[in-house]
Image (cartoon, rainbow, N blue to C red; front, side):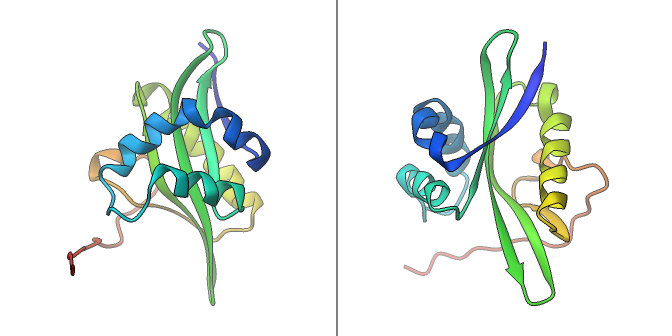
Length: 138
């Protein structure tokens, strides 16, 4: 097995979208209902988010997909992993963590952040810094 984590450039995102969409939509179901799948694709095409895929080139399998965003604050820059979905997680969690860390470092980010369930804790050396609370207002 040869796992490869690929950052997909925006020009190729639409071409592969139907393959990655089920993984992202699955992750989206646990998010607040503020995005449709088409919104995610538009974010990638406008450089507002980065699309990642995890494949096994030997078997031509797609294991998962992720979306990240780089957010600039007055005192720092964060790469936020805000959607991540896939199967056989244990086979590729270290690969995607390493690839995202390298990318964030290359983008001069100060932090790599992930929002999600505790079960998806995966960045080695990462720490929990709070809890996200949501309240429906409508």
